[in-house]
Image 1 (cartoon, helix red, strand yellow):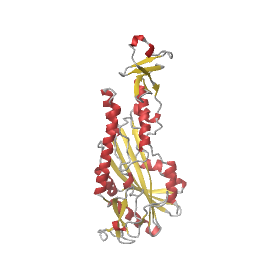
Image 2 (spheres, rainbow, N blue to C red):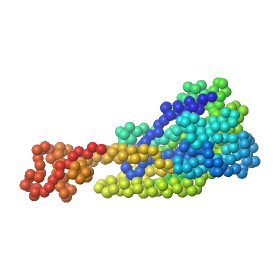
Image 3 (cartoon, rainbow, N blue to C red):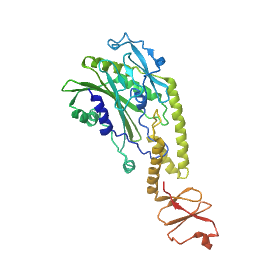
Length: 395
């Protein structure tokens, strides 16, 4: 039918606001995709084309009528990027979860035209603090407050649906899957505990020819010290008309009975705790030259912005360096300072802005001057000290 493939492309091009947000602390980076890498049905870089030894029979086949249609239920394993089982979900044995697949291709296929797709996560942030809003806007980031569910669907999904001739039939909560999302989030290490709220919304869509598809959206949101972070990610399903309702029930059934691997959670938490410790060490080194009240302000911002992800984000180091530069520029502007470098040692120094030239001695004392011809090494009034001329810092 092609509906899911078109939806995938639309979400990438028109709704792909996967922002990288500036963390003014420079210590931690916002990671507001807590559940995305594994709870998106564990469909990104996961799957089970092989490793059949990890399969297991599901012992609840006879208690839920219609769920085992298409074969006895099996606990299908899903893997993280290191090849470790992350979660097992009970789906019919006739369903095939592809460990690898092309972008825009279904992650699960099965009988009766079954196709299940996972869609890219959308991450957002919002604050009412005008000063923080200015920081984010100056760095090219977009702030978006979380709307209610109906508004979110109208803003982010309905425009695509209209292009395809699709209309919304109904929406409904799926609390049994939301409980799994919330439980999993509570198991994950958090450097600064953040109370997250989770919801899962299902929606049915149909076109004039009777083609139907089902969209399941996971939503998560948290607020700390006036900073709101929220995200959503989606799973879509389509199948032949006679099988559609059964397939939808089977998908929800499997998601609601996900069995997470405690060993994988423990390994993830250990990695995140180590990264958090390293981040704090780097933060303390940057802050030690600042005044105590400034350090306290920065730690408060760290506490407001910190959240932990269960996967190592690609490009983290590049974003880290970029965010450090934005914060340093912001801080220098507030304090009317400039950053200079001693070309002999490579050491950076903060100086009061306004002079054309700066000289520094071995004791860390600097001398500003607006006279390009002035050389303190030739000034007898300076007790024959050794002065090095500083250069402007260019990142």
